[in-house]
Structures are given as structure tokens and as C-alpha cells.
Length: 541
Image (cartoon, rainbow, N blue to C red; front, side, top):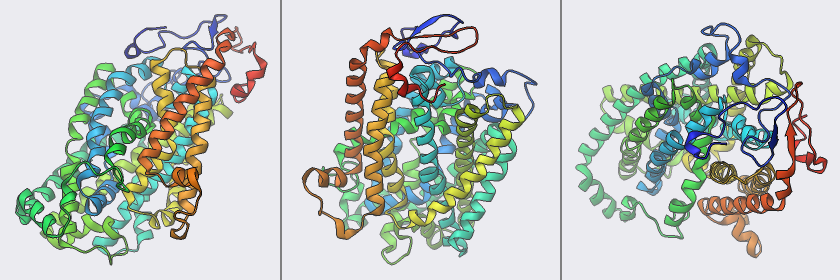
């Protein structure tokens, strides 16, 4: 076992007949019921489009500028131009902290986690969790990844693009959503990750240029930053330019932004298959690190490209009587303030951002379905079948995301909904990753228990928030009222600490797990000398 997390934990594959302690970083390596995806991909022609490594990881040959551009572009979609600008109009500059924290977390991905992922030779982050802990953790992360993609990334991007079509072209919302799905799914299905990353780099240039033009024009029209401040003061909204809100702020309290928000974002920036897939596609570790550094520098831009124009829109227009509320801030700014040439440029910029973001999520989601789910049931599947399943999963994701849009319309601001759901479901996964890298004794019993306990708490809060109405406010007794109504970022901190404690306690409580050994025989089967613990490995038969 290598000592430095930056060097990765897997220096080599387990050899037949070798005993591996379950507490060891290699205990419960890739399931014996199928060959690993990396082995499957090495069979057959190297550069054919029906080969798994080409379709899902662009044949691991991308240069750093493609990696960095794709990381940035796949993150910035219509949900940012619509949702983040809308939150800027509704609450001010505080939402920009999500982007500036992201710059730090991207560096963590590139310099701490990507060497580990790449050394393991995995295709997906759930596959890495199986290397480190065992099959149950892999199955759980696969499930959460798919749920997060449908409830947040895909549906939010489609909804954001549909609002743009509705506000600028007068289209029906659901017609616009259908167009967004069709445009993005077409080249995702046809070309795989390489096609997505090529278009990502081009689209990044388009929407960055367009966003800078809108930022410069709108700031100049209002009289610079001093003009923004004066207008906000005149409207009794001087706090809109404050990054740190009071601790009782309903949306972005400073305590939540410092302690809860980064913890809730570790999954997104360091484990989300959508982004990690870009790092895994890099030519080598040096290109992966350089790409992450490039993307980190680019993350300085979104507050200026997106949030400031949203604040300016809130100064000029009253969104209280508009159906989509402040989510319509950015398109309204375009149609009401910008010259026609800029309107056309920015509509195309937002649509390309939406296509880039949505296509990247389609590619990542199909990778998880194919490598982490389908191959479990069909370990002998051919390359052609794997690619076909990946393409069909994109169509299924598109339909499910479309069906979630009506529920999303009834919520608060689009961007807040995204980060709120993320705060409910992902902190337990983040703490498991951190403990898995930084704390050697962490084992599958502690990790899986932390995921289950944290998941039950998070899903309980999510279900309550989804079904509750205003008449229920404050009706719950004592601790339950605190649990269900605390700020979502404080809830992320609570989940993180709770899951961490569960992982540590269960790891110590199952200390005898280090006596359990897996014997990998010539036939690839494993023998468990602690049958009472078989619950944790019931999927890995």
C-alpha cells in the first residue's frame, strides 16, 4: 500500500491466491464476478468508436486544455445563466461563493484525487469505491449519482434552456424543453466523450465571450459598480453586495457558506462522474493536473459573467409578477436592455452552454449505467452491446428529466433547488471519500453504514421539503422542527459530521474485520471467513 494519497493506493492488481486484509486499501477490489472495465476495454481495436475506452473516456488521450475547458464548460450550463443569475437578482452576490469555493475544490480533484483514480485504472468513481471499500459502496454511489443527475443536473439544465426559449422566442416551456433534449442528446449518443469534449472547448469560448460582452455592456449602462451600489442603496438593498450574510439568513448564512457549503460540494467536484470523467480522459497525470489548474482559474469568471448581470436586472425590473420569478432575470436583461446583435450572441451562448452541460451529464450518466450496473448483470457483454446500452440510457435519462420539470417549477429559485438537493444527499459520500483517502483503518462496514445512515436522514429531509406546504411551518415538535427546517447548508454540515462519526465508530466496532481475509483463487472467487458480515457483500456474489 502506498503511503501518500497523492501517489494512489493501487500500485498493482491483486495476484491470484494472495490474501488481502479487508481493512487494507485493496480489500474488496473489483468484483470477481466480471473482469474490470479497464481490462475489457483493452481487448479489440484501439481506436474504433464502438470500443468502451473511446466512447466513455476518449481513449485516455486528451490534452490539458481540453480537460480544463471541458471541466469548466460542463459545469456552466443554462441552469447557471438562469438559476444563478436569478439567485443574484433575488439575494445578491453571496451565491458567487459557490464558484470561488469550486476553484479550490477543482485543485483538490486534480492534485489529490485524480492521481488515485488514474492509478486504479477505473472508468467511474463508483468503481473506485469498490476498490477501496467494497461492492456495497459502489452500488450506493451509482444509485445516488443517477438520482442526482435526474433531479438536478439534467432537469435543471433542460428547464433553464426552456426558460430561455420561452422568454426570448415566446415558445411553450415544454416545447423548449423538448428542443433542448434533442439538441444535446444527438451528438452525445453519436460521438461519446471525445465529441462532447471537443464541442465543450468551442462552446466554452462562445459563452465566455458572450457573457463578458453582456457584463461589460450592462455595467457600463448602469454607471459602473458605483452605479450598482447607489441603486441598491436607493432600493434598500445594500446587503446585496455583501458576500457574508447573517447566521439567521434563510438562504446563505455565513456559517453555512464557510462550513456547510464546501463539505456538500466535495461530491460534486471530487466524485461526480460528470467531472471526474474529464480528468480520467487526460493523456497522463500531468495533463490532468494542468487541466484542473486551468479550470480553477476560469472559475473566477462566473460571478462576473452571471451574478452581476442578475443583480443589475433586479434593479431595473420587478420580477414579482413574472411567472418564473427572478429565474427570468438574465433573459429579461437580454431582451429589454441589450442591442439586437448582443441578444443573438447571448441566446446562442446560453444554448451552447446548456448543450455542453447537458451532453456531458448524459455521457457521464451513461458511463455509470454501463460500467457500474449493466456489467454486473452481463459481465460477458460485448463492446457493441456496452455502447448500445450507454446510448439507450441517455434516452431514458432525457425522459425522466423531462418528467421532473413540473415539480421543479413549483419550487424556489432554480439554483437554490439544485444546491439544496445536493446538500441533502451527497455529504455522506464526501466524508466516506475523505476518510477512505486520509484514514487507512476505514473499512467497508464503517463506510457503508455512514452512507446508509446519512442517506436515510437526507432522503427524509428531501421528501419532507418536497411534500410540505406553507401551512406546515412550525407545526413539528422540538428537535423535529429543527431537523426539517434548519438551513440546508447547516443540514449538510450535520450530515457530514453524523456520517463521519458513524464511519469511525463502525470501523472501530468491526475492528475484527481486519482478521477477515479475501482469498482470490485461480477461478477469481473470494472466500469470506466472517459469514455474519455477508450483509455488506450480498451484491458481490
